[in-house]
Length: 264
Image (cartoon, rainbow, N blue to C red):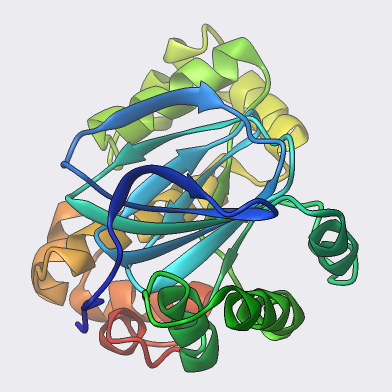
């Protein structure tokens, strides 16, 4: 996977008046507490997998993909593996106006990064571009963003405390094969009450949610170059074919094509 070269690396945000940038590498296991920025934020992951959690959902950002965070959005994150990040922050009034022109500007969403967007983002960390050129590049980034496809890497989380406790236990412990009655017991509910309340609270059946969770978790395993056979086994799929089929239904391409950046 290509890595940025000749980049300006800044462990702290560098401000240029109406925009700022952050180039940072996070060690595996790094946890950043919930916080918010007054500016709109585009996170581009060049290496590793970043888990970003908001009040209502968890987003997995795989390598060579991005996440958009609107101004004021509370979020925290966890580096599932060593993660190289390039972050852009759009704070000027003209940028705010430009943000308003794309349909998902007020929503957290993962973005499938096309080559043009990738080069523009990385180019803003190069030293050879003057202020006027950088501003033109930023303007083009904001014009290109609406044309990028969304990635379905969000996992909705229950707002109900008991349901959230059970769901997070399944995620944390990777308890994909845990019987339903045991998961329901974690929420202090019967199976019937748990399944009814889970769908009402999350918008997905528990079975559909668990399937989505497994597939999103598999992105980190793919990034670590585990085989499809190993991933299917670890995540409890009946076979490699079953995993590949389910992956394709959610992400629109086979696992190998997705991680090699050919999903678009």
